[in-house]
Length: 247
Length: 247
DNA sequence: CCCTGCGTTTGATCCACGTCAACCCGACGG
DNA sequence: CCGTCGGGTTGACGTGGATCAAACGCAGGG
Image 1: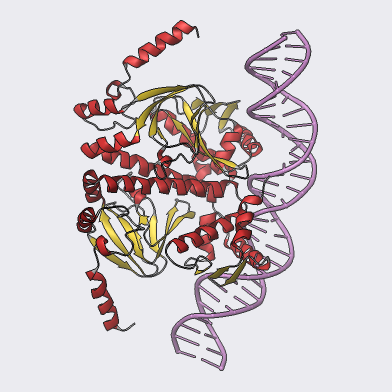
Image 2: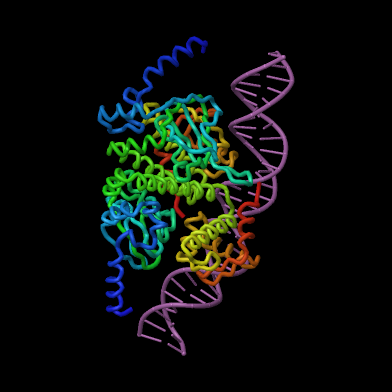
């Protein structure tokens, strides 16, 4: 926590700014690029940005210039409408991209907020377009990423439109679990970075309902919950819960 | 309706297959392209496809090869999960693109179904990627289209997550109204192409609730509803309804 | 150590929408 | 002309989750 330690860490990380030796390269934009292509991508990532918990990466209404790749940390995005209502539209973790919504109007349409101290790589969008005209693989991969975002959103629409509270929370936890697993963390035990209120907003539920549903899962022996620490005891049970209900 | 008339119309439309003289060029993919660029795009649109009401344009699970631009008609897309539940994820009208969800996994993730006799232009995706490496404007425009889809989905998530039935239906009607207007049709009077059930599925409501809400709007003097024919009598009233409620 | 504050849990009550069921109505076929 | 059929409307009733309210528990500060 000392100033020196922070400086030292900064220096260390600057050394490995490049995509080509970033340990996320299998998760992030560079997937499938040849070494020489990766070199080009290195030049593209113009800047890193560090954020503290609670900092805004960008705000709705700001001019869109770059997309961001999460290098470390955890984000949420949310939209709000005039009358004060808001909704969390997603949670982003390591290797995921932020800001794709801004491309359409050159203006960000949501807020992106760090839920813990985080670091992102800024990728100026016009550069990305330029480079993806040269590198097929990059172009195609970028298209896939955008498309995946659309598919993900459809999943959330499904969840919000047809599922009951238990199913929503089960789906949410299983999704988190799987994403942690993909990043080499335990799929069974993790810390939530977001509050009950934020989960509720994402799932279209009130925080009380989220809390009650957690308790309920715990009573059923599906989970161990302590504050934001979650241990999944019975993955299959959660999965069944998600699908089983019919009407 | 005679066979001859149909044939004649077919012949007529084949003549103007090209984007360069398509009257949708201001709405569809070619927006903003220079004449010589438009020529190149012409070669890209490999085939038209006609569909009758109820026909599937593609089904979830099929291999993805092309995206489609709606030339005429009206579509819905829906996703379904194992247990039989399904959800309409969108309604597409003239000039809008279908199939973007398939890019991510090379497999369509939803069904696209014609709600009336329709015609689409098939755009082989690999060709589109090729051409957009040559034409900046096309590339950028395509990115904007994908991004707009993401923003639209966020809007639906907002609707499903935070709005009550009346607000949802008001938002839905205003959205349709505006899209009809953009296409030169009356924003105040139009025919719904979809059933109450399909509206309900899209809005996360049951058809009875949709029906009741229509009746309610009619009692309030906001709408005149007769079957699928809608006349908006009081746009401002609908808008206020959409925003006004707080909690 | 205690005080304060915020996020969370838990309980009691309420209500918007779902469910179930009857009925209506325009389209279509015989 | 009537019978049928599918989508739409309307009513009565049930319920999942919202709302309101109180209490808890951990973290940070004095």
